[in-house]
Amino acid sequence: MKTYTVIGVTLLFFSSMPIIAGQSQSTCNPAVENTVIYQPEEDIQDEPLCRSQTRLREYPNDETSPVFQHYKNMRSKQTLAYVLLQKKKYSNLHSYIALSIQEALQALKNFVDPSDPDVELSNNIHNYQTAERCRKLLPNEDWFHLVGLIHDIGKILYTFDEPTWAIVGDTFPVGHPFSQKCIYPDLFKDNTDYGNATIYEEHYGFDNVHFSWGHDEYMYHVLRHNKTTLPEEALYIIRYHSFYPWHQHGAYAELASEKDIKMIKYLKLFNQCDLYSKTDDVLDYESIKGYYDKLIKKYLPAKLKFFKPTTQKFYSQYHFSVFFNCVRII
Ligand SMILES: [Fe+2]
Ligand SMILES: [Fe+2]
Image (cartoon, rainbow, N blue to C red; front, side, top):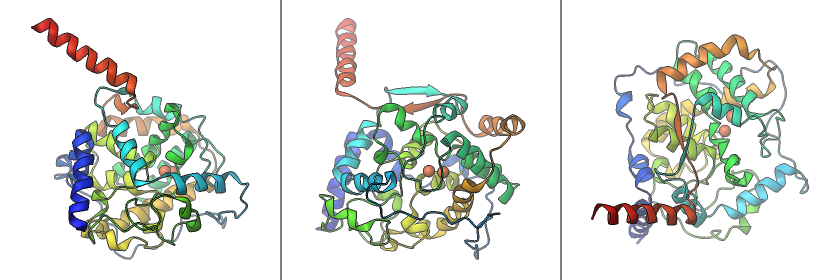
């Protein structure tokens, strides 16, 4: 029964979004096969590269705080049905905005993450700080440095008027019982999926599971669609870097596949750079920008097509123009 439910939901989802369907089933980026990937030691520690002893990720219990309010919305409103709608909304090939990475970074200039209790800087600054930490940690792995720079670009969703609870915050699987290891777990009680049984088989693999919608999932699909030559590990980090319940607390292990077990070391490694860069000083961009421009050129097209929301209006216009052209040809 569980299998049929999964197949049913999957077919429903895939039939409505051809782009994402093909990508989410894929576990291999052809461009990666000849890429030499750094293999971190099995015994990676979670020791931060942190020069300060600042404590991070301490979440207030104050119900009036912006962080609490953010998670109150995210926990209650990110249902399976909502996620499927969001994926459909951002999957139309004909609805996009073309931006270079630098333009997309500039667009993040005014975005401050309300789910983050540790940083009040704009995301543009955070991206460069993370990239520089990645560069220090693995100096010879340039793809890892670029991941640092672009990992949060999906927050460009805010320019499409998405609410912040549909952009940022720790991610979690939907269509599956919520874990107590998530922050503010009691807030899930207001989610209409609360108490529902899972729709997934054990160890189904995160690539086949639906996650709360946000910048991670969005940017993963943008990169896939734009045929980046970044290795599979890079795309994996971008897709799951906010999945703290798993990579920091081991939650949802029942859904993890062999691939996920193998990849967790990259998430942990990257998290050192992402999280602890928040304690760094502001950088001199002019001196480092040239280095990252070269990496962008190596791994990405000059302009990326960022999916824009598909609206009812767009559908009407699109279908009308297809109909009109058909009539003209006849
Ligand atoms: Fe992020
Ligand atoms: Fe980040």
